[in-house]
Length: 125
Image 1: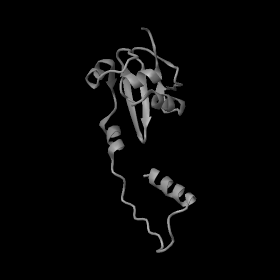
Image 2 (image 1 turned 180 degrees about the horizontal axis):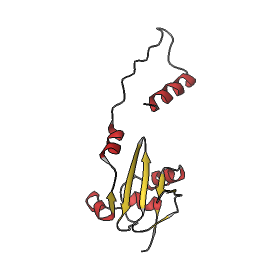
Image 3 (image 1 turned 90 degrees about the vertical axis):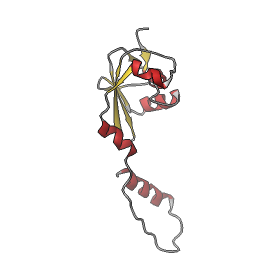
Image 4 (image 1 turned 180 degrees about the vertical axis):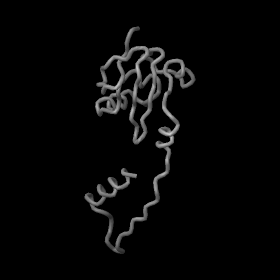
């Protein structure tokens, strides 16, 4: 096996739970191979550097072996080397700052527009 599709590889090494999630991430420009964005059908070879953006964290992996079959978690280190610094991993689990949102009493639930504004505010944190 000389090369494997990137979406299938990311699924097989347990970066994503499903292959469709891996495909969506590739289509959404959240996956890069050797610095270039990767479409789901892009081929991965041994020695390639893969960058995956999840939320605000950027994970980096180096391909050691190829596989297109899903494997157990204990076998994953034989196929990829995790180059992600601890500072990036901590971003994924960092608690959000406490924001006190105050609404006038009796004003009801937020409208769709207000809800979007609140979501945008929370994403900036």
